[in-house]
Image (cartoon, rainbow, N blue to C red; front, side):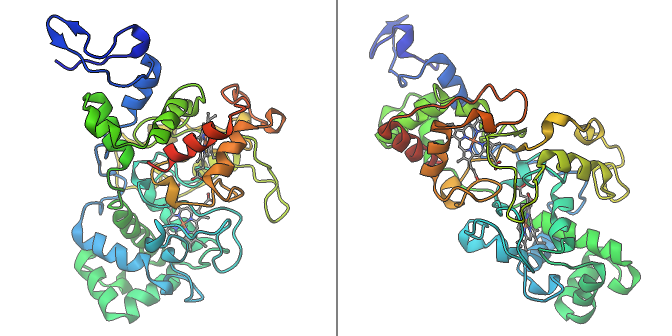
Length: 378
Ligand code: HEC
Ligand code: HEC
């Protein structure tokens, strides 16, 4: 029998029921404990996405990895996916705002663990990993490329030609530009599907708390334990950052400026919804490999909403210590800056409805450090 004991329920160390000795798990309240328990196990079940029939195919994964690092994907021959998602840097670029062929207006998120997401990009403008992988290829500021440029790679490079013909059983000359672009995007997605972070210090701690193993539990830094209590409790972070990925997969506004680095309004999720619905490459389109559309209800029922204006994706916090700077606009340089933002949040800056979840937390210096220490364990 597994016993979970909470101090606030009045149990104490060594308290016995039915002759069984119960060891105090931690001084979590029932609600804090249930958020903590919900933040795992890691990794979650890894499912293939039926819209991309190449996922899980080892040959395609290998090709996808080469493509990911290949600068000839871009028109200038100078930019690869890895330029902004550097494998040596937890698949980010360390910049506030990414720079491709020219300046972009967003911060580059990691592509580690993206396969578990529902929506891709800060505004959720793609509904599958493969269609998200096509966006930077076509984007004028990222790679400024197209199917004709990609064709050159498969036709002129012996290794790429061989991989292409082996996988598709036909030569690149027999496939049109759009088909080449779709295939390339699906290969890139198949590779990214394999990028899953390892179990973290937090995962070992969570296991120890749930299973009442005090020695393992004690390995977790005390400061981070205090941070966990805040995160899952009074600081209410887990109302949005919950589950094994530390995200509810939804969109919200946390009061960042709406004007981007080009002096334009960034409409966030509002333009993301328009983009998904109008994309020929969405889950309901002709290029999906899932004719049943069974796993595409979320796109089918997606509708524009006015309160989506200025909302951005609640990002996963797995490995967040590696992904500075933070936020869609890269405006926060450190985790401390992020926590201070939540501590002093200006509610007038939050335009959308329903953000009553956020209140200035007025944290003390030591609470700020605890929350940062906790975030560093994810
Ligand atoms: C110029 C830098 C740059 C390049 C090059 C680039 N990306 Fe990105 N990537 C970004 C930025 C910035 C975002 C956020 C986009 C947004 O929200 O508008 C992003 C988002 C993503 C996401 C979504 C992650 C998430 O959490 O939602 C994936 C997946 C991705 N890129 C894959 C790729 C692939 C594959 C390539 C190569 C074909 C690539 N990227 C090339 C900068 C770049
Ligand atoms: C109302 C939902 C909500 C709550 C509550 C919330 N967050 Fe967030 N969080 C977000 C959203 C949305 C973003 C992205 C905002 C953007 O870029 O515009 C974000 C971004 C972050 C980031 C940056 C991650 C990155 O990769 O850039 C961190 C770290 C973070 N939150 C930690 C916390 C902590 C700690 C708390 C509790 C004090 C908290 N969040 C509470 C919604 C929330």
